[in-house]
Image (cartoon, rainbow, N blue to C red; front, side, top):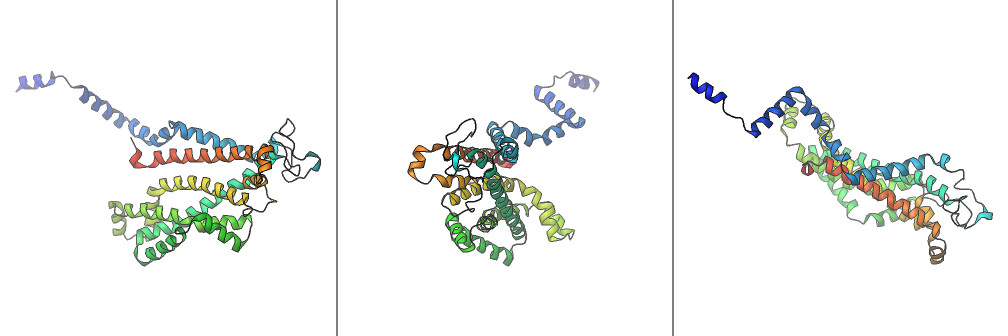
Length: 314
């Protein structure tokens, strides 16, 4: 019996066994779990496109916030002596048809455009998550009614529905945000509902039900955190979509009133062919800014999706 034990002790351990022992030591030391806790963050930081998107987003956001520091011109001040001046050291992006500095209008206009985009997407997320989580968890008549209402709003092309509501409610900053929320909450609702439908079959949800916890506590405190990843991604992508819609509506003269500086209202000055061909500084700089900002948000949203989606984990 002693000889058998001696022989077993002299058996060489394989490379796989040694790796398992190393992993066990790391786990017992508490290092393995901490490393895994930062896995999503490390994956996001390793995503080059997501990092490019964050840099673009932060540069444009900070430039808009620090507009009074970066420029001394009033975006609404009319100066008929400086009409349609080309870009120069005095006016970086030139001046428009009434002598307003285009660079200052781009910076200050970014504040309003970002407010519309982010405010509308957060409003859509609030309504969509509030209704979608509870409807997906409870089901029944409440789920059927809200689902049919969302289908009504989603059955129309959103831009057409927005144009219809703008003509009814009128043009203003608050009206535009309300219209975007009314027409855009359906997609967030369906996403939150589908996530909750898959989560409510989990064993921990059944256990919470057995303990007699309130439906609201189970739904919003215990289930919603496990479904928040795709919702955050939807918020970022919706922000870019609403910024583009605001620019489209303002270009047509149906968005924010023209006296308010927004990226769309700056583009509104370039509706005729003469301006497009001869006064390129009225539309090209703000067009590049809008494209870069939307592209940056989309890169960031794709990075968040790859990080938070369990099917994308490697």
